[in-house]
Length: 425
Image (cartoon, rainbow, N blue to C red; front, side, top):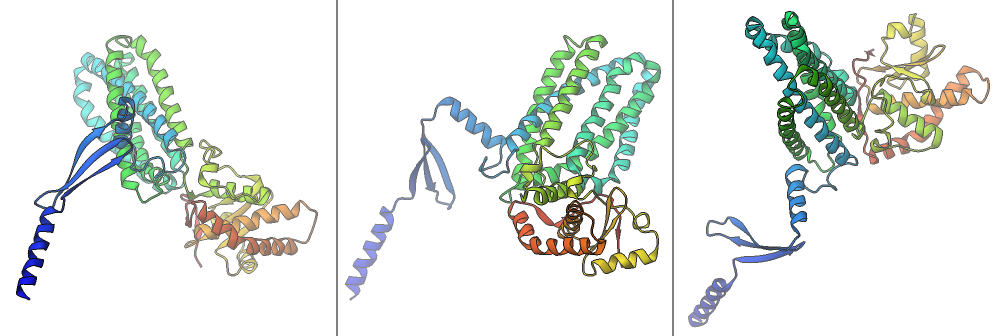
């Protein structure tokens, strides 16, 4: 028995020695060797790469500047967003070089303002940041509009710097206002970055999206600085050249960020997007996803009232919606189990939400208002009958409606109404 066990042991040891500690894998014309080192670390060695040079360069670029798994790991519109983001950063960086050169010229003319520039830059910029920081809730509600406003403010500050040599006696004032505007722009740009990136994340890859997005920004900022240096030493060596090229770069910058924001499919519910969802559903029975609404959003006037969704205004103080306590009691009796109040005046339907109301509560109220407006078009009826009919219709369709909204990618657990007023009982 001992002899048999000894033979089996030797055979097992011999087989273990013969087992390979490496293997090769071939994928998309690339052959790699994988090997376990003595310390247990897995090493990878490239054996053969028969891909064309253009394809290798393209895939290397995508791996460095796009999220892993692109395009399947991001939402629709990410490529368009990235293209215009690159254009935005390129033009902005070039424009900043021209403004810096102008500031140096102005500082050379008057040494005293040059010494005060650092104080103004810090002090006025911090003041701008403090003022803008109080508007964070509005930025959550309308991140795309605020992102565009941030770049407009930044270009306003940069424009004042470019013009500073024309008004050397106003150097302190122009530098101060310019840095104040830039301070507000910095806060707005940073605050809106996360909700914008979040709208593209599909596979829990927010950090990867953020890292690759910042890589794109850095690359094109460097290229823009190079272009700005070239312009500053040639066409824009004089103030006349800056007055021509500066507005052109600013236009390209704002155009880039506008198209960038239009391509972004924000998937949180705010007043404008909620009204558009309800309008599409009531009119056509269609449930629109974030990608369907992105190019229809009004980025200049996001608080517009949509007639097809019941002309709803949300977030007005309750004291402006209800004049007497008896009215409040009556409105609560209409929908006793709901977390919204609806009160119709001559032109609009005012909706006030409870403090802990969610996106689903806002959708319920919006649907009731839209159905009331739809029923009123069929002819005169008692108001109680109209409201009761609208509420019953909402209850019938709501479970399937909100379920489909979630499948389309909407986050219905919260409603972002900015600084809108709510009530608590």
